[in-house]
Amino acid sequence: MMIRLFLAVLFLFNCTGRKPQGPEEQKAQPQHFECRLYDGLPVAVGTSVVAELEKNHRRILDDLEVANLPVITVEIWANNDNFLAAMERNIGRRYPGATGYVQYEGVYVLNTGDAPHAAVHEFAHVVSLHVNNRIANNPRWLWEAVALYEAGDWIDPKRLSYMVSGNYPTLAELNTDYNSSDHKIYGIGYTLAEFVVHDWSIHSLILLIRTNGNVSTVLGLSEAQFEGKWYQFVKTKYLIINRQQIVFSSKYLWRNFFGDRWNNKILNSLPCWGWL
Image (tube, rainbow, N blue to C red; front, side):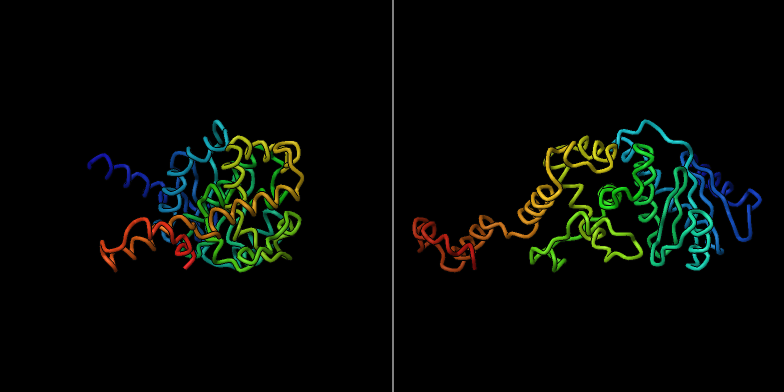
């Protein structure tokens, strides 16, 4: 307990013990990340973000087969206008509605209530850049799919009407620039990476990063074949109700309602109950 208390005090000192680099800025220097806070954000925000990043640091590096990284700068804003202004200074463009972006050794997030999780998503982008420094939005579907998968950003496909109806997006659609896209990639990106890992391997996902999403070279499929197989994977895993489970549940309820008077042979002759 004394050791933990000492480390907590040391971390707090590192957050506040240095002269700020600019107005209302604070710094922290833990093991793998240097955190800077703007717009009067409390130190607790930086502490929670860095703790979450540290928790996921080694896992994501191992997943994407990156041995190590330099210390990554993490900058967090509370004000959206200031965040976008800094974005324009850093990368020459604004992306309204975005809550995070990255550079080769930097993670930049807007504190919208879940900054720790957003930072992990952005950190996965940084690691991808260290696999292939030309991968940023090239292609966009893979860039986001990897980060969504590594951050655990899964959305149930049953909540997405276009997936339920079978009107799934193509890779070309998902590659649309952020400022002009419908952002469907954020709804289904996790399942794209999950499909690759499930049907091939995590190493195949890495090879896709290295080849900028060349599904033909890495997976032996055309883009159209990849899209179709991906949707079939999603449909089978998430959209089709498991008939066997429903049959079991229906028969269980039937037995409990009518008791032992009903013979198993009779119940087993009623497979149609699985579709009720």
